Image (cartoon, rainbow, N blue to C red; front, top):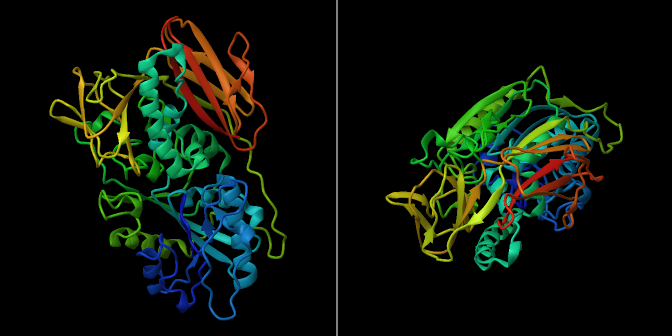
Length: 492
């Protein structure tokens, strides 16, 4: 049994030795590890920690090992601020270490949050764990299809705030980018990109998994009652960070009705939904989270009991003794993305926002309260991350009232949907609806945006990259208006 924590966490390597009881790290010591050990399972925790260099291994806390037991080499430590496939490689090589030093031949993986993504990447990269067969995967709040918080933060971060020297626009953009900065700092820039639905929609096509049982669990503490069925399950209900459909890996839609295609998991098992938040860091909303709730731990135990003797594994590495090597995933298949351009809007007044259409976004610091008459659109329990709250909202024909802080409104341009067809390094761009004054396309492979040249038919070639490529489309709908922004991150 190997437990894999998620983004920004720090988890020590620990073994099943009795001396490691309670030493499995903040993620697992609360409930899951003690329960699995009490049930008689040998439990290891993967070494994980953040590192500002996304290409380097992470910095894990000191390991917990029993007498005569070995700690893994540092280069297999998962970087909880790093890239998905590099972390999948490190996790796979960690499994190879368990085979070589502990005689482990069969493994069940349990992942929280991005730990489930890194586990899927490890499963795909079979050559990294010779002698090991992975027999099941259980995920808790894993963003299999992305996180709406990352999607909205990406849109905010891509806003053009320099149009025409407009003082009100600059004032509003500063407020929006403050919210994006809070989320980016909480997630890290790599996690922010890789948690978007555009990234997962292209990354999912590169991943493979056998017919082993994959059990998914979702948190649903945040349920916005006034929206009801108006918002797809990709957004509502959620654990404040990951929506229900993404955590369960089931089909849904974005707010612009673009389909969210689930990953290809042949034996997907719905482990249930629970009224909890994503992690202990959100305990100011409720103390109940995916990691300390006995009923969720019971689901994990049942999934592990069912998955231990499965005849069809998730994957199996080559014969023991084969040197582990980096394995490359198959290239992404063609994908079609539908993006709504965004622009920030509102008066230069802290207590008011303009009327909204369905799916517009309201964002602010946690503690701000935004209402439409008697309906509360944003308050302290709204979805978001840490000190930021943001969410799509329904239509309101009156001005919104704002109290307790500053809020901004992002308006979706539904008249000019941006369609982006991606096939490896080729892109094909089309802007729907009435003619616009100007279209600019830009690309970033980790640095500043630069012009992406397209022919008259909207076709072009992306520059080389081995991770996430950002494509930004800037629309000027009329000559004197502000530029609208649509951003996508592509797995490459």
